[in-house]
Image 1 (spheres, rainbow, N blue to C red):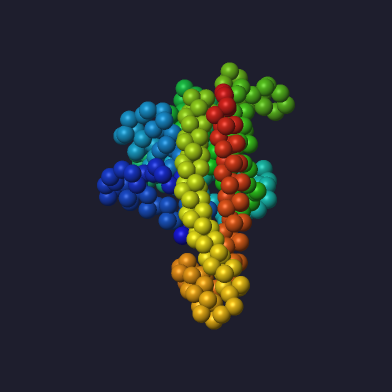
Image 2: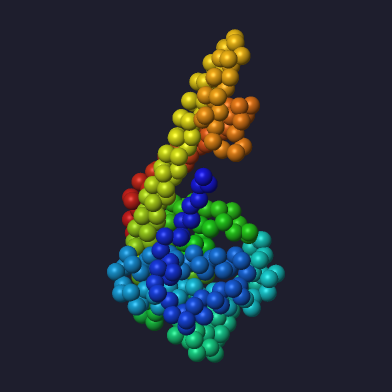
Length: 312
């Protein structure tokens, strides 16, 4: 049995009955590089969950989730040297990267099947305080679907493992988002960027919904890992039974007794790669695995407590 867990898999656009038009829209993701495509899929899944925790109706949830799938569509026209750069972008390169919003918008507007979802591509980097791009809009002018996608996008982009940066933990990521939800102090060059000093970059209500999404998924991951732990414990018990017979096998004097205990060992060996010669090694591997997985579960429990204490 192989342990698998996909943090984003539980709720997706696949939950809904998609018509042919929507399938066409989502097929556009195949044109993106593997990192961007996975990012878009993850952002869409988080967006879908956020809509549900915000108690938005099903129609708006489906619409916003499709917008999220398509939000980075314009990146297919960003040069790979910039899109896949492993170090920090220069100011000039960042200006090129920022054009993915308008490129994606224009792509959607030119395609009748994509046109209804153009807002996600254009507005997902706008900030409530006016410090975003491409238009520097403030809260009243930013579509709500884009505000939701921005929160999902920032969480996934910061926390995901990428080829150009190291992984940042979930708690650290959420704390960064809390900071982004607070008003920016007017200092240095930020005076020219912030149009509304009373709000932060992202909506606090949406961020609170994200806390619930992450807490819910963390609880689910703990449950899934406990389920796998039960399997590991059963395997350990099975091989410990084999070990008891093996001790008798080692002590047996007569050939008859040896055959009896050997048959007892083999009775508990079920996996194709297990044998009387190596089962004790397999048993030790399971014991190590059990310890490691318990440590992960305890870490997740600690994270869950911290997530539930977060406030904005």
